Image 1 (cartoon, rainbow, N blue to C red):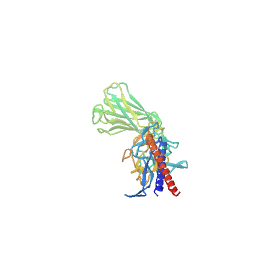
Image 2: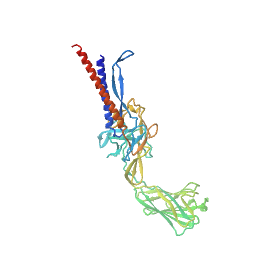
Image 3: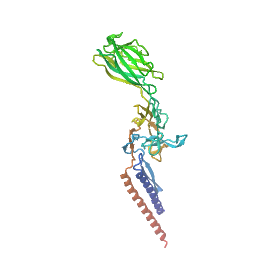
Image 4: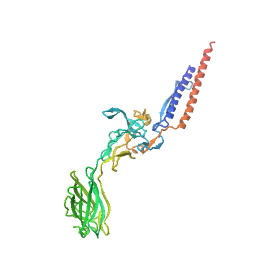
Length: 432
């Protein structure tokens, strides 16, 4: 019985070492696979009978020892959409299973991966090299993510609608002893169709510390939008500091001036019709009684420090970028950007117990624990590294060392099989 037992034990050793060789082969073959996690081998002894006076040969099995928690080296990539996780966690991804009515249909199962070599495909989805679609949280117009559901991230907002000008900011100094009149500034604004229109601001001194501001827009109907008196310092009904705006008076046309109050914004509103109906614009000239915005101090020239507006023309898709906090932002050629999604990081209590799938993907199991999806760098989740990928955690030198050991162990087990066979033959030959 012992001879047969030693033979079967050696055969189990051959099987176990063969499996170990398979793990090593898999590791070496995927040593350059992005996001790959190596499989080590854990040998487990199985007993037949063992006591203080007797021990019969048992067997051995080789169980896989997964290393999903062991991070591979992070390497910079020329791909600006590549992502790596520095720390614990996985990207949530989906697997496409076809199309219906021209739209991609996704598998209902939820997958996870560390392979972050994402790129935009022809349909605007972020897809990694293994064909898995990156999932994230959708966001509202204010950029707040909806953390209740994960959806495949798609870049479909390829046009940024024009934004009509609604506000003008002006900072300038009107000389206390002016020369030729009027003093003029011109500004390009946008109408509701994204067309450029010109607004002219003309300043004329009418009395000490008193100026008349005329607002005109040649492309509007009517072109003259109105006038208003701007009183500085002692000229105001309630005098303020010299050189600062004290009040607005005698507005005409569509101009409406804000009521004077110390420290309140010194703002005017006017309406201009560029062919699409009245467009209300607010002109901010600083603050009542404060030396900011438009002032009146000594000087020989009319000095404009800032004249800006908030409208934008029609914009077309320019590029896409992923930020450190996971926000996916589209950049347009009009200088604007829009956040369309946020990439979260998903963690597990025991990630080594996740079920493996093709393409460096994993799926949750009972033993792995529930998936916890969080913002990057929060609740134990790793932080995002943009423009980088995580390489395989396989160490070739270590794998080749394991290969030598497995090869020698396999050979040694064959010798035990040979020896057991010879002893059995000798036993059979005892009859002769």
